[in-house]
Image 1 (tube, rainbow, N blue to C red):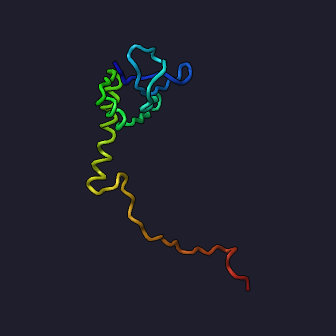
Image 2 (tube, rainbow, N blue to C red):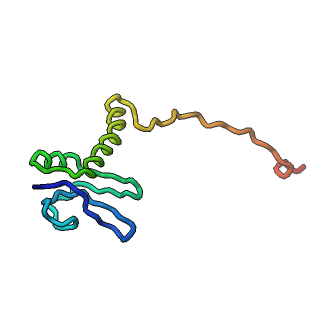
Image 3 (cartoon, rainbow, N blue to C red):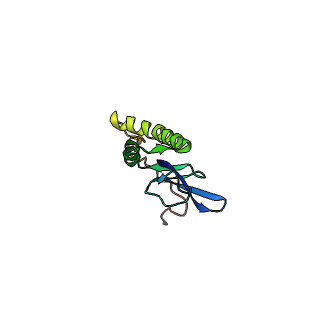
Length: 115
């Protein structure tokens, strides 16, 4: 049976994970079929290839509990951006351009012309 689960990478005490498709009988860090994303728990960076995950799930692969939670988190993160794009709004509204404000020139005694 195929599983979509995490494969530990990174240094000691600084973990990072790949989301991989692997045979369930293989070791956690064993040879995998395809890498479909990565996750860094320290920075909460999550990047998933949802099309490929959907492809493997349609072939019968099952997600681990942790990957299932990560998928739902990823979907929640992507939903507001997708809704804003569908509504025709920009995700980060740019401020309206303003005209430059001119400051009055101040003359100092050193700037005054000598007579």
